[in-house]
Image 1 (cartoon, rainbow, N blue to C red):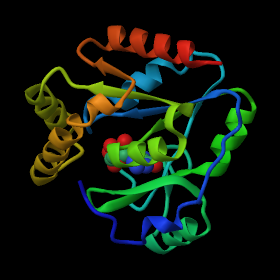
Image 2 (spheres, protein in one colour):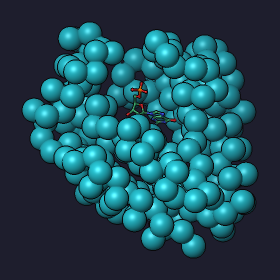
Image 3 (cartoon, rainbow, N blue to C red):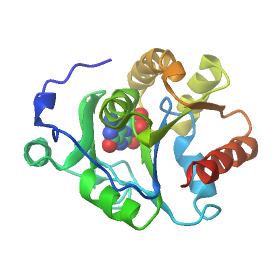
Length: 205
Ligand code: 5GP
């Protein structure tokens, strides 16, 4: 796991209290496990679902759109947002910074939404520290590391060295899966999507 180099975590808001409505869902799982596809496939099935758009300093991949896939930021902009307490959590993932904007989440929860944060394990552990069982933590696991390697290769968005880096991180992330309330193995997309949709509906209060 990378250490935070940009700015220290003291810049996070001190104590966050979220509306006592809706439900925050923290979804993690290694790169290439299919989190995006899974969430996409249940978006229409679960009413009042809000998918949190993260901020990142990484460059947009072909086809990615600013403010839709991510809020793409420079490191300076990101640092300013951290100082302003704009993130629920943030972390350095690979060589870039990623953070969850707080304000849209609060607004969505006030409206009773199920709010999905698709964030890495470091970010998830920060949320857990802040909010404990106010949120529900779900880990999406691959059927095996070999299968994950195959999927990352097929995705064609990373160079070979990046794939190796992502696999190393994946192996470390898998060690955290016991910290989550539920582990869903994404072997069969339809089955995994059913399990995820069920977990979200059950989490609603
Ligand atoms: P990618 O660059 O492939 O879109 O995402 C890389 C990793 O960053 C993924 O594991 C993803 O879950 C994580 N990530 C995306 N947004 C956030 C965020 O706001 N906070 C944290 N901590 N991780 C994030």
